Length: 162
Image (tube, rainbow, N blue to C red; front, side, top):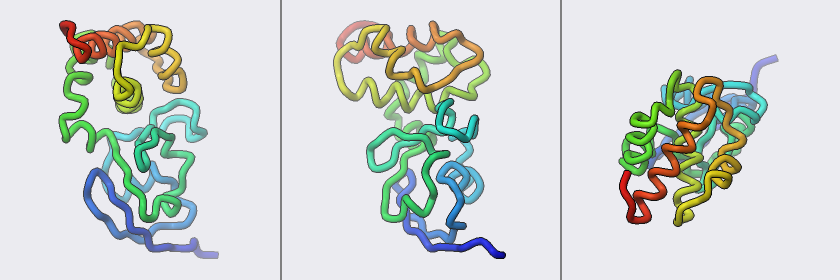
């Protein structure tokens, strides 16, 4: 029995893409295998770890829980897109300065999650930062450095120093 192949039109990081994909292919697999956007990682494949976090039509979600065909007509932003645009340059610098990226596997999902939180404005509490990122697992940092980095960017954006 052959896999069902469907045509999709999708905007990825501002670029319109037409593709043929298997009906059962996840968004994260499509991004990595078909588009060579490997910054979005595959972790648990159950939507729990956050390694595959992307933005779909403005909403942050897990790319392993969405089929590529469900994204037909949608706009997807990956870590490559938000990074290349400069939208998270301050977060990237803070993660580097605070040693919040050790092995780096969770970093793309953490950065997209942090960007989502900070887009709300203000300076979230450390507990609010932890709560917002609670679905993103990190096995290396113990989270303290990640929270420090995000807090420092929130303060800098609010008029403080980085």
